[in-house]
Image (tube, rainbow, N blue to C red; front, side):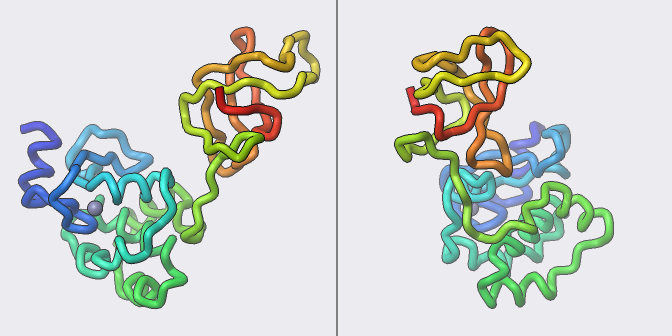
Length: 192
Ligand SMILES: [Zn+2]
């Protein structure tokens, strides 16, 4: 059986976090790889987008966590714990978090991403025009950049393909110019 088939079976083909039956896919709980069903949860797209901080948290979407956090599967417990932590300003989430017991190993796993230290607000990357940036976007420099200790030419109008968003810094992206990866401030570029 594939990991997906196993997850479908154990979850009864529903999102293991919100119980929705729609738009389900396999989520490897970071920093784990998708090498075992024990590291994965079956989750709907709405949950996934919010877990992965691609969308703002919709508090009401997560109320079911106070039930689903009682899952017997550590991977589900870990995601529930992280999401409840991000929602801790809601009293129901704080209450749930108080009674959700994770054993030592699972608690260490849950803390590994640092998600629990963030609040429910997600800050996105935006270009100089205020347009949201996504992984893999193509951008254009709106200013000629001087790159210290390098002869790279990063002139106004340079196209940078396939950017990476720098985690934990919404004012920075990484991109390749002349084959070299550099960090570029978002205020100096626009989405191509
Ligand atoms: Zn869901």
